[in-house]
Image 1 (cartoon, rainbow, N blue to C red):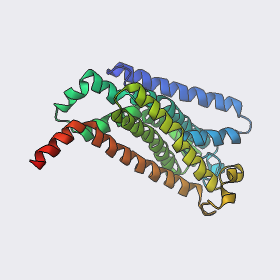
Image 2 (spheres, rainbow, N blue to C red):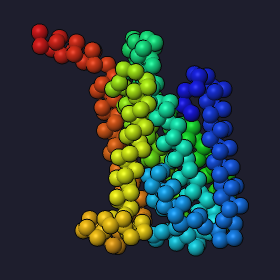
Image 3 (cartoon, helix red, strand yellow):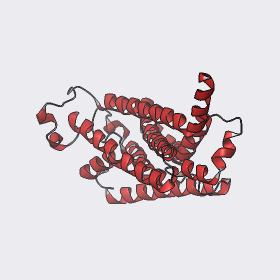
Image 4 (cartoon, rainbow, N blue to C red):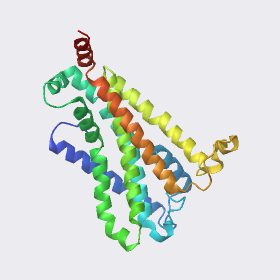
Length: 271
């Protein structure tokens, strides 16, 4: 959704599209499971793995206190995470490569912006619509969450977990766009990275923690996480892991953004 034109109107349209899609999916979810009030277990597991977030109804969240509103908020975070994984690599995976070929990156190099500023701006721009959409939904649902006595810490963890997964995709996509010369290559690499290794690693983590059926044989092979590891601890792990990958992707992108300048500065220092 990021960058469909470089004007305010296009960004607002992208933001509204995300909000409308999320609300439509929540409405469909409500109609689908209105009697039971919970997401189908298998669908929940697949969605949580695709979004690289914790499942909805497991762990020590005590959802019985919070009710359906908390479940909808969590499901909304999962849907936004999946939407980001679908759309961000296709747009941000080519943004720097396209700027390099059109000469816009050379123009940015003549400004006061540093490599870190450019990479950070593109990463935040890629994730802004999704973070803004979830923030709007959270603001709308605040009265319902307060009435249902939802824990503030639980809500904050959901937000940080969703933001981490979205920024992770944005940072990886921008990094892929920096290290390639053609936009299509960047998109392909970004999609492969965002859909193959990281969801697979997250699936292994969930299975090792005992949050997937039969653990896919992983627990039987001895790769396990302590049984008393609650869902809250798993959320902390997800947030920390996402932050680590974001920082690493950012550093790689900054290092590779202007390689010719780095080589020129190196030659100057050796003289």
